[in-house]
Amino acid sequence: MPTPSNTLTAAQPLRLVEATPDDLDRIMALEQQGFAAGHREQRTAYAQRIATFPQGSLMAWRGEDCVGCVFSEIWQATPQPNATHFALGHDIRSRHDPVQGTELYISSMTLAPVVRGQGLGVVLLQACLDHVTAVFPQLESAVLLVNATWTPARRIYTGLGFMEIGCLAGFFEAEDGARQDGIVMRRPIRMPAPQSPQPITHYENFPVASWLCPAQLRAPIAAIYHFARTADDIADEGDATPEQRLHTLQTYRQDLVATSAAANSGATAHEAPSVSTQWPQVFGPLGVALRTHHLPTQLLHDLLDAFEQDTRKSAQAQGYATHAELLDYCRRSANPVGRLLLHLYGVTDDLALQRSDAICSALQLINFWQDLSVDIPRGRYYLPQEDCTRFGVSQADILAQRQTQSATNLIASCVATARASMQFGSELVHQIPGRAGWELRLVVQGGLRILDRIEALRYATLNQRPTLRWWDFPVMLWRAVWM
Image (cartoon, rainbow, N blue to C red; front, side):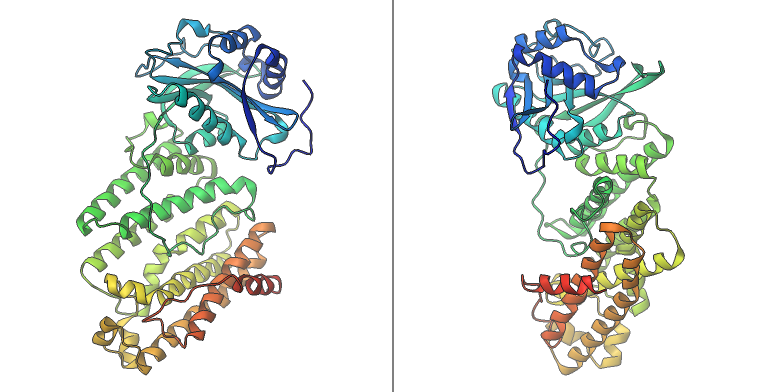
């Protein structure tokens, strides 16, 4: 098989076609490149799969280059498949049942080394699921086996909703002859459709695994973000009662406890305390991040504490007595995200942590002062009572959203405090290496630009919400360059 070209780029489209016997040399070349000797499938097994189930035998092409393949078969589902089911060299005809079978077994998937790290594993596996289930709509679940040491592959599978259901001890043989465990993973074919959330502002200024983030950190950063955003959705979106929100947040916390327990003990999910099936798209990737990067879980619990506090205060129409009390809320609602990112970047000195806290608290405060016209009608009051008293702003004025001169002066003071916090923290951009530092520059400038927009409105955010326009971004980029 010709070696895939080194000029392949993520922009080139991936073309999937059913395999034929003419592809066997290509398949075995991919097998040779992708697996150690103890993991390689036999040529006769692939020939049988192509002949028996061509719809489940797919080749991935980019231009003239064959860059990957995936194979599957249809089984009658069993609660816990055993080692015999997954044996290398097994004859597909012994279990393949396209008439009565309801479970799709992903028997093999590999990519050429030159295209790894481009997200094609997700594309290829999802394409296989879509292609086969379109022809065999009776399928209810998918199952696969993965070496316990293959972290990138497990990240792909958990990201697609596969959950660990068992462990086959010593199933695989490493090149040095050592035995390695196999992890059995399963997911429903039709994943529960997530509710479409309303736009969330609490975390929109944090980096979300963009191209500026280091490639190896995009998955854990995305896992942290989606953990926080999903909790924010629970606390803030829809028409659930406060009691229902708090109950759901408690279940969410229990899933965090179970997931972190599994990560800390080295156990697989089926050996850990049970995790609910409500948020596999959150706790699958988060579990990988916890195991791989040893994330400090207390910071995740701090986030949940803040969401629960927000829910209780909103239910009781309570605000914050002092600026210190509001900053304590920011300490739990925003600062943990920055500290988690610094943990991933390997930055741990005290000054960096202080600067990170200053940036994150500033971002949270900026969101508050930007969203007054939205939050007040929803029973969320973030203007500290001591500041309202100092500027002569009554609670009645706040509830009626009267933009008096006193209210304008109050908001101007709040904006100045947020700006000072952001400016103190901005020196952190010089401590974060590479592209991540540039990501942070843009985050800082985004927050500062929102403050500019509030000032341009003469601080009249009790009745209107300032937003960034396309022409703000060149300004942000220019200022980021000169930080």
